Image 1: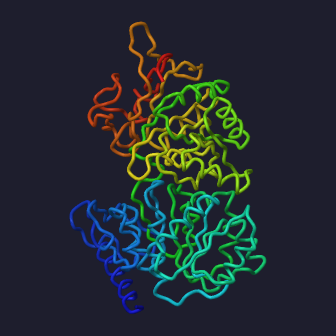
Image 2: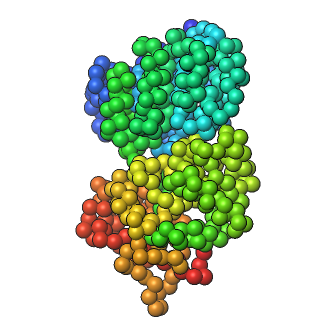
Length: 503
């Protein structure tokens, strides 16, 4: 058994070396990615093929059986699995909902299958997660992937009793999935020892390495062996965070299947200019639409999340709030209710929402714009998952206009604006609600983000397509949209009307 597994690892390393000698997007130029390259280098988008099969990634037959229900590996899985199997340190950047967990879990399990089982209190791999919800979902994914492998994992986070977690560590587990706070508590009690750790994974690395988490991350890393494989997976990776991450990796491969802070192409994005006191009435107005089925609502503060959830409940919309001040039990009940359809709306803060991976979220509504532009990408990434379409609506008051400009600059997209019964002084001067003009409802499949579609800053004229698969979705659109740097687009956003009598 071990010999076959060692052979699979060798095959993966060979396949990676071969893939790294040419750029599949252009002519065969050799070499492009030399194996001995010392500085971090970019895995230029591939090799990525639509018809690739998991069997081509040199995975163990047991793992192949466990992923047989997946049609094909996603681009991030195709790009990341070979270098991870080859033992390289990796920085992997891909949009939320593209399969990052499998991209690190499958090669991790294959590596651990080829070596002796872990001893008491001595896990061989650590996955560090920013939130309890994300840690729990990683654990659920591992449970499916590790079936029939004899490997085990334990999920560790705060808000629940720690005795069961200590018992699991004493019994021995191969992989620990943890949030920093509880993990540091257990390290302080010597309930876990990372002396034999082989692989360290930072998931949602941009958030984990942000200023709020950096001290705890450094304290955890100080307990790890210097000789290890380190993987960073994230949806966004700002340059300063990349520089910081590079200090803890050894000659990493940078896998980037989508440019940082690029929005998912299947998401139709719109902005509603509305003053603060009108935001909740506007939210109720929008939720009157029958097609607004399962909604994730974002607020900037925990108190704001509670108030919005209470407003929705009083109006007859089943809703709950989820944030850091909620007990673990309350958070799990809210998330379970949202997943099963008992709750139509889940109101969340950014940190709590990092672990929300729910199929069928039709709309993401941002009552408050985030102060960090990259957070916008994470928020709207909760919809349009697994190849589906989605809708993202953002509310913008007069005070929020600078935040909107920062977001549009970051995602390289001018977001369409929509007029509505609660339009306030924060709206642009242009208004289509003139006598004789037919009012329009917000386009469910209008402007889409991402390179090559809609208004892309560096991409020039885009090719956004409407729900019928052809042409522009607004009657005012020209043959091509100008990017944010264009003079004609910098003065105002496009406006769609959303007047009384329309949902």
